[in-house]
Length: 242
Image (tube, rainbow, N blue to C red; front, side, top):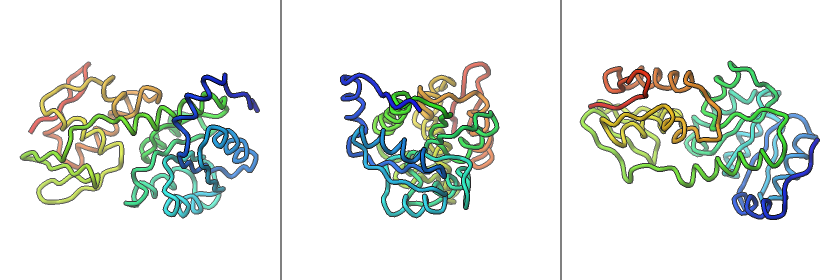
């Protein structure tokens, strides 16, 4: 494995982002846990480890990490199911989750994003690239642009503190990415958000996802809030209308 990281100047800037951050690494291979832990601790992070999904959920609920690096193929509970359960629990639903796995197939990546992952990173990956990806995820969470307060429209109400949408007096608990997508569209009703803007705002510039991922999330939102509100602008993107 490549244990070289980067120049001292780069290390200092990267370390500032990870310094004192709590990161949970989940993988059933001991050597990978040791390797990742070494490089993350070197950047100043506080690292917790788990070798299966069930243990990961318990640690996540007790330690409240800032970010979870999650393998897909594991005993007890695979990574996709683990991610789904973390997103369903109020005390862990907002934790950044990035899959780090040798499985690079399109269907596996789609399953990961549909489960609520923030990123899908394919092994092998050099430590300096991994650190950069994690830094980007943390930076995006800290600088997410949203309108202040909770939107109160005629058709929908959105509670950003609880990640809840209220439609016809019924509360809808949405997966993280679906919530962030509808929150973006609702932030300026009538404005057309291009696919590029949606990808950058919801998934981040350093995350590689395709148009199909956006379409899947739009379809699921339409199923939950109705098909009349989210309009498709062919060849451009989407907008929200009352």
